[in-house]
Image 1: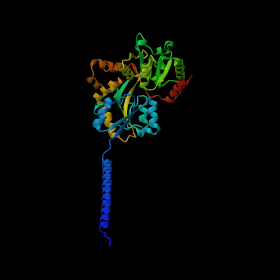
Image 2 (image 1 turned 180 degrees about the horizontal axis):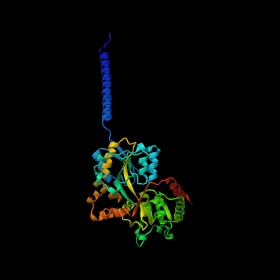
Image 3 (image 1 turned 60 degrees about the vertical axis):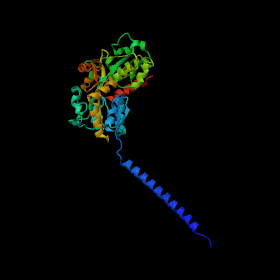
Image 4 (image 1 turned 120 degrees about the vertical axis):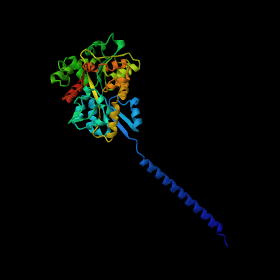
Length: 374
């Protein structure tokens, strides 16, 4: 008679081993489900998205906000005001929480309902901002404020100091045949304003620059076409113009103090001046988009960005004049003078700040004709 005890024992061991394996798998699955559940319950790190001008999201001042608010700030940069408006109107508004429109399009962004009203009680430094900038109606509608002035500055004349015996005193120098292929201008409507100044259309009223007639625009177009042989390239980003100077492709250009600052850091012999005709410039505001899903965090970001100490750090990067004059307490005498905080009103008189251009489409049409002309 066969002995089944060994067979039964062997079968039992196999059965026990199988049950143990199943139990182990169940424990692993349960642990995995628990881990996933905990991850889902853990609050996600909020992300604040910006669409701003170059220099406005530098780690030197953004990092402190990210750390104190346990968030991530992600920035995209725009090359022109028209690019900003096109993105906001083209269905990308919800992509961005904070924008930095200049004074030529800020009012139209507000009137189009693309910006959210601000709670000024949550921006303690608002009262410290320049009264001239703060009291402007550019970002106000129906007794509500939609933006905070951030920084301001000029479209200056930049030049390689080794190519000139002194600072050029007129925009007209750009047309000098001596500088054929050595000039760069911004691929933006500011170039139209500059040519209009050379033609004297800002006299007696500088606001005429933003309201040119058809005849004046035709004259501006003709003037800019005469300039084309001198143009090496129309620049679209600050880094692009910086490289043009570094590579000695250009010796003179319309640019921003940001490029002057960047080139000086690179020990490039760059000069910056405002010619006798004066120049146009901009007041940049910070706004929260109406479509933002992070309005509370965005409001805290605006409050942080206009604090005096943050403004000083922004100016270190951009060399733009801060809207909060309290930044001066963190500057030495030379720095205050360079940023024109020693007499901002006098400097402002040299700058015809951008205004809304009612016939912006026509201006862009003229500008595109100049660029595309052979």
